[in-house]
Length: 346
Image 1 (cartoon, rainbow, N blue to C red):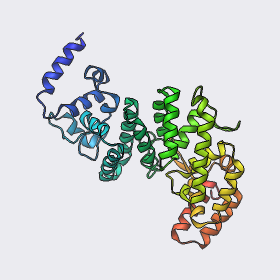
Image 2 (cartoon, one colour):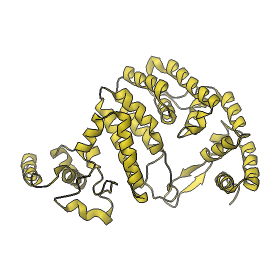
Image 3 (cartoon, rainbow, N blue to C red):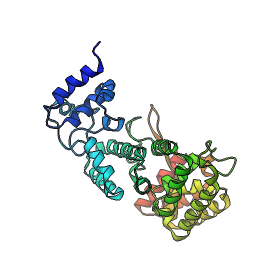
């Protein structure tokens, strides 16, 4: 059997003759997992999109021929590109990533989002000196990960699962000592403009304050849990009063965190108020609908048992029926989608 050193030398001999070796290494690592260790290519690099700047992947057979050239496109998201991102200012880095996402053709956008998530996790795992800024930048750009356009008609594993950002970023945070996790959360509570993903992560790490909520993990945030939960509740309450809660990437995450912090009555008062406001009603009718992914076809659904905890669903249904009959075309579409998902129609 040929040893790893021999394989490495042979590959390096040929890689030196390519115009750009990093894309070839990434492609080889994806095709042959054993080579990822031999070539010292990380999992993130191996998942790099190869082809045009829009990010085509090896799994896309329509573009597979570009993987087997010795002179692939130099715009691949390889090691040098990731390193340049990590070395740049976090907000500027995400501006670059957002630009690449905007340039991507529609059928590739889901894959590019997955790629951006992988880069985000990779940067956190590097534990850079400015990791606090990176964490805030990731949170503020979380709308990238929560875009479910096309999800209902997609196949399983083609698009990002709704819980994937929370799970992957949460795992990266759990690798840090409790004190560092608490510091990152504390800084984010103060400085993040969008706290949707932060609310998800907090519940994942520290659980809820009520027995019927999410259970906490051992040493999630340690002795800092109560203090940080109170600070995050203050942010949510402030947003509920100044109207910015509805502008968050996923307002539902804020409502569920608020509820789980032991403020069910306050949450229900707030959602009752929203049903009487045009923008508030639209938001509630939209966020209550989720996509259930299944092999036999995806469908939209409103989980009555869950949503009854934070909103009066009977009242919301009545408001939706009224909006369906009296609203404009956009209002009717929103109302019909909610009512269908609620199960009014068969």
